[in-house]
Image (tube, rainbow, N blue to C red; front, top):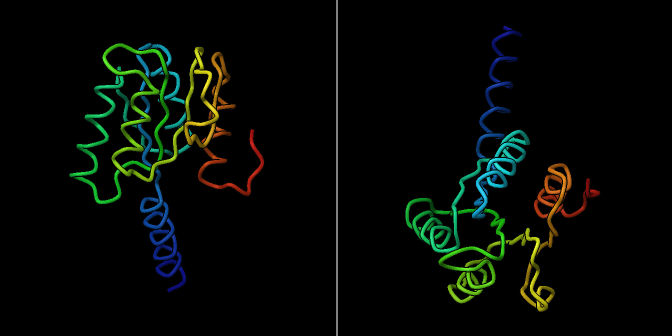
Length: 146
């Protein structure tokens, strides 16, 4: 009897954890950076999709909104990319009224970065654990970064 109850409790914990998995979209034109961020965040238990430029990122954001009722929980984007810059992508997100936390992770930060309504700014280069800490801070604002 105790083992059946224990199994049910374990199943409940697994189901709760699965329902609380955060979905993150990473947009960066550098394949190595995309892979590094993908590996780092999936190792932390997040569900991560990637896009290679701002236009592809925008397509992913709009498609996810249509197919998944809650869409993405976080956008992590570079700035300088072909087709649509990170700043332009951020502008589209805000114009569309998407209530989406955004981390700008770039080696080329715009002068107006502080006015873009970002949750965090990650100047490149950064360590994967620093990004994981920033992401954790977005989702759990009362935790210490790092």
